[in-house]
Image (cartoon, rainbow, N blue to C red; front, side, top):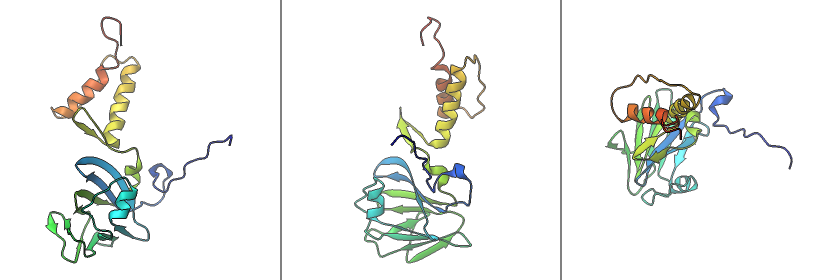
Length: 184
């Protein structure tokens, strides 16, 4: 094959179009993740196989654990008779729970949130480095700062509250700049 084929993923937010509702797994088995699941036909079934296929093998999740449905008022979560239960916004889900605009759901050792559009979360996953977790948005900011610094900028003003976020941006800006000794 001599030609590159375009990736036309339905989750590509840059393609425009209607939002794709669904859920995003943020934490699974003691590690941060960013795995979007799109609703097909307005509903989403999550169980052991769906998580396993996404690389999230949580043995505490039942084969058919829960069903999420997008409603006019928000989201409806139904526990499908799971062994270990489903927790919605910190309370055990007995049967069905309907709320809006978003739900925080725990199944087994997996935490997910419902979102109106999963496409922005289809970017490269969460990365964990140097005791810092960076999702797609933070990585984009850090990449811009690094490019700005490599372009020869001598100063950069970051308006943010004091703390780790601001210091990590400062390190990203100053790291690629030439040292006084002449080396990078």
